[in-house]
Length: 99
Length: 359
Image (cartoon, rainbow over all chains, first blue to last red; front, side):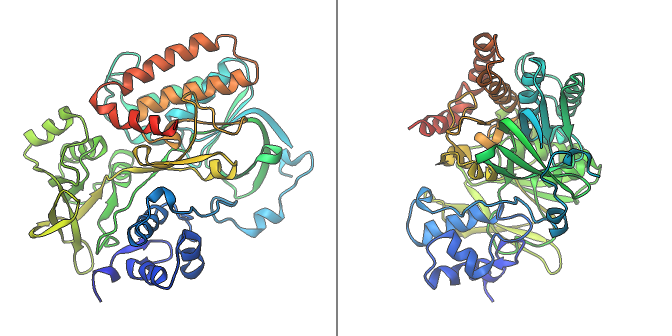
């Protein structure tokens, strides 16, 4: 255990600096690749907190300017929702009444 | 599907001003906010604002929030949906998917969309940064100023921008000890008047210093501080410990831009504005004709500027619908106000950021 094991990068998925570093060492060069390997940014906050931190770490290790780091795709929904809500969604006229 | 002229996402200082511009000109305006109360960050701003009378000097943020919400409620065609979250924006048919407070979802079609989602707090990566006691400054303000709860007894403030300095002062007013303020930059970022006030109350401000680590068994007990060299690397021989049970991070904000990405707006990375922001023309127009941006989502500043950028984005959206006969006059006044807010040395960072946005 060293300092990298107690430095939290993604609070939602409980990922440390070591977890992120390991992903970069294994060849990840983009935020999406790190996300697919580690679930970084896939929790309730959807990456709002960790994205800048992972981006900064990638830019440091790969010696790239932060503007050159490829962002993740931003897909709906912006926060986790229940499937029930989607199932009950009415798309026809009259959805305003909610009945 | 329900249709509105203008949908505004976010009921903070920017969103409320944007909405008022539409409502005052007779348009159907829908404002959506995920909080249970309108006002955004204003609701925790118990301090009096600075500047001129136009900038509401002497008025407390929370009172500004009340006043704006009340004003909006006088327009029958303006609606405010609280405890509601915009889940997505589908640009092809200009549709928003919104979850309401009962967790059900509905679709709204909006001729124009104004994104005033604000910003989220930045976290710092240091060992122990998840110990209970490590807070963002926004959380500390919410605890103290909204709920009347002291976050702890001894606070170390990280960041000497205006947020760090003002929250430090509010902590002192609440009889909480502030052991020190540390600032990584070589200079204090906030206004000298705020810094002087807390210095007079005996709080040391360490510039070119940062947090090396937070330590404690179960909860935060002390912070390890060190000095930074010119390359912002910590110098081992300079480290020292400060006992504290709260470590408050006031180290900047990131614009909340998910919906702007979803809308297909051209995004630009501008560190001075807080990270990725949509390209915009200074009056809220983005690269997508139906989509406008206001407040911190378009570049992190402060509440007074958010009100002005909100008004400008609102006016631009109304104008694009052909409903703003007083556009030149109204935008002129708000633009002059915004220029005044950004003038002087305190505004140099934002001016630089806005310049590089246009490159």
